[in-house]
Length: 482
Ligand code: C5P
Image (spheres, rainbow, N blue to C red):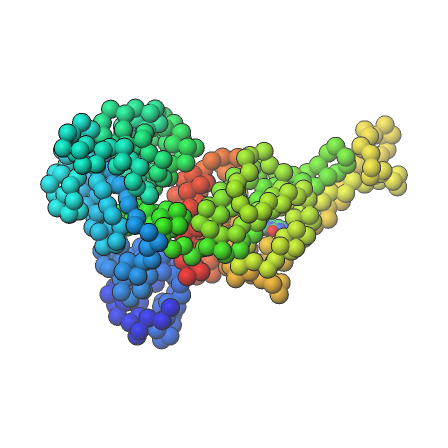
């Protein structure tokens, strides 16, 4: 995207070359280069937007991205915002402001306790439309009954969401307008929780969180930091801009907003591979396939044509265009190459690095077709020769049919960032997602904590559900391609 000679001004606005380089964790010379070329690499847009949000500066006119006036509406879009009672209720005013800049039709419901923090009159005047507060209102019911209010929205956003509304939604309690609407809807629900850190970490809240995630509710997780109540920990409402962007991504996913992953071809590799030693024994690893499957599913939901190539796993299969089941690394290699060319490849599989070939020291030949027997002759020693498997990711990145975007994973137990960066360079890929797999923190778990590393920067994402990671990665891919 060309930026009409504005890059120098933009950098000055954000605090100058040194400041921007420091915040983006890149060299000042890179910024000087942007100024010279009057161009910013697209993969830096997100970091710049984050910095501008932090400084409260609107840079949309510079980046011409997320430009709400050019947003392509495929139909009349309706969003229902539910504001619950919490100190962060005032931040919902900023979310209303962001939504009002678009052509999205917005309805708003406030719970009783939300009205202790901000008034319905304020919300009504910002939205230019009546704000709903009561379940049993003769006047409201005659104009728009609450079932219609529940059925109308493309997405329901609850922000801030309290522990109380999470508990009610998880249990199916409908004792006020907000909770009744949530029970009567089949729209996508996004929750942006905000609460005291002890309430957030309470076993009941965490159990409700997990129940809701498993039912398909999307969370914009609360952030770590100092709370208004004076305590610190995880519980602070995510930034309104992030909540708003998540809302937009869901509208794109529903195809009511134009989605630039429509029709884009993607290969995702996932799960472990298995290397047979004999007909009953094998070597493999602990990969569950959950992260790769979440990514495949998320990209397919956003219109991408996804081919999932998976090793043996025991989790439900996602809805994607094509699923190819493989066992060994060599099979995964062959099937991956037979699916090229594609625009994107994401290698999330934990591919076995070696095949193990059994050998006996006393030149007795091992019969490959039968189970290896226990050794009766004490002079015999069974050993294994290793043969390295082909590196699928590195080979795809260096083939003539190289996808436009090559993304790999790096499971590490030490020096996570450095090791991952080395792999990014040696395998010649565009982005690597590194995670710490020591102490079984990741394999099989629903959660992951990752670093996203490209040649210029390293982003740290807090521990979160693997589905959330997939969601944010899809947003990132969207930005990298646009
Ligand atoms: O070198 P290492 O195995 O740590 O690299 C991890 C990344 O490389 C992952 O994205 C994995 O899917 C990919 N890989 C591969 N083929 C191999 C080994 C790893 O595609 N044989």
